[in-house]
Length: 143
Image (cartoon, rainbow, N blue to C red):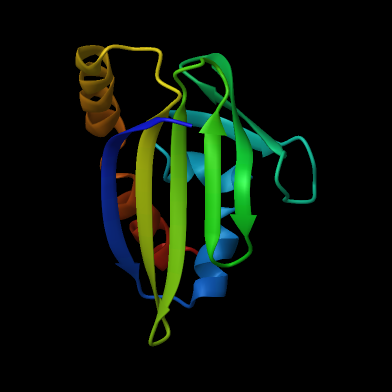
């Protein structure tokens, strides 16, 4: 599988890993920290590889598929709309009772030129470059 890196960001959340994981995977709360997402729900109550997450953005229904998963450590979501979809990799690491979250976003299986990948990467970074900062703010204020 070829990939084109879009961006990587890191944030420290002042909560334990298990709590950050709970908030990251609370799909109904995703609109509180994911830019543009109006609603989100899973098609399976059990989080596992292959679970589809259905979300609405700008009035259109879209999907993520859970591509890889290690509870409290790793979540990889792939968009499923296009062959040149996106991969979102969340890595969570314990840092003395706090959580370091690393997000890597890539274009997967790009059937695009390098210039088209760069253009898409710029648009995604502009729209979603602050997603971890938003997750951190949401998590630290969540009940």
